Length: 480
Image (cartoon, rainbow, N blue to C red; front, top):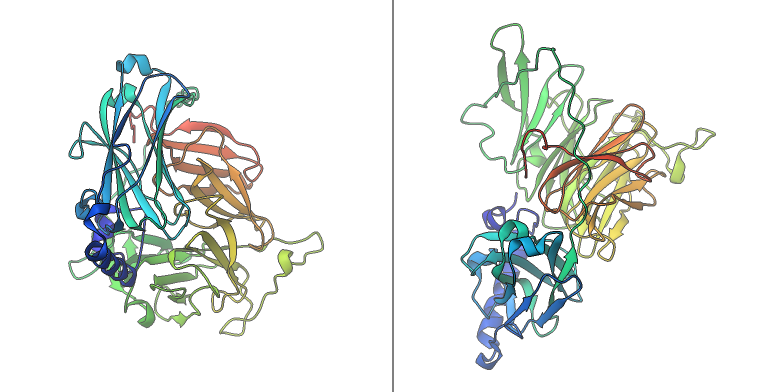
């Protein structure tokens, strides 16, 4: 379970309590041991840009740093954060077709800076932010046609950065705005009766803390499994009465109801096996799985050998096979705890410092092999989305920022090797993308573009080419 600090200020970055304590201690030591003469502002402290593509300004960090575990809340100006004032000349109309790209760069993935941009002053409205991790850069955009010209406070937070060992370098440049795609085709009017939706609320003793809830459905029994912090809940619906009712029960496994830094639940829709994982502040997680909607649980190894420490995800599906029927990538199916062969591969992916890794289980999630890299910090940054597997065994993991674009990571050999396939015209976003897979293998990627708009894009060839990149909220007036 994430700390309250990070829930409030860094929804895209997770770190364990132990690490936060260590960072806080480091900050205290740094603050006391750093000479007063080192406390300065950004160098230079300000700059200006006119609406001419290609022009830029640069500056260097000078603060001693340490840590600011609650982002701007724990920022002490010119100690663990500093501000560069950027002035944009002209009128908003002068900036038509142009944006300002603001970027921070440093050397070591273990160092962590965050970027906040506010209008007029450090207390003004937030315009943009970039708070990834782990990475070696942060970037955000200003669109003066939207937020206006004048002054912008570019605030750099030393989230976990001790200078001068790895001081950041800042830049702001004028670039042409990406050309927007055509407006979506208007939907065909339908005379069908629209679906209806109901909210089913658990009793006050259950499911009261669920910062990032996940849900799975057993298609055979119709029961839903829902995780909320340390509680794994089973929901049984009764559609024979009107309005329908729901019965909630706590069906938590023993080892997944003790402690958590990130709860996760996944149900394999082909087998109806549900997996529950609780992240620990280490390279292991606590995991159990059930084949009877939580009545009985089997403890698992929990994660791959040498997996990452953060943002775990579980997925599963058919194996990819060679023409002769053998499994690709040298995979060998093994009997599970019940002595039977589980039909599908089960995957566990997570992030480490500087890379993200994935491991495969060949015995239904009981044990996992060695984790292998999907990408490193030079290829993609930020946290990845959730694993999806197609009927032919192709494995997909989406990412919101690979070389400045949204992308899917693709494996055709049961997770052994990976290819990054970017979405042309997209820009890095702030939320996890998601992949949906059709029966014919078509993939649908939903992503929050860099401008905040929700988009859907389609590929019929596993992400090699893309089509119909649509603004999902265009006709509903949904902008973010």
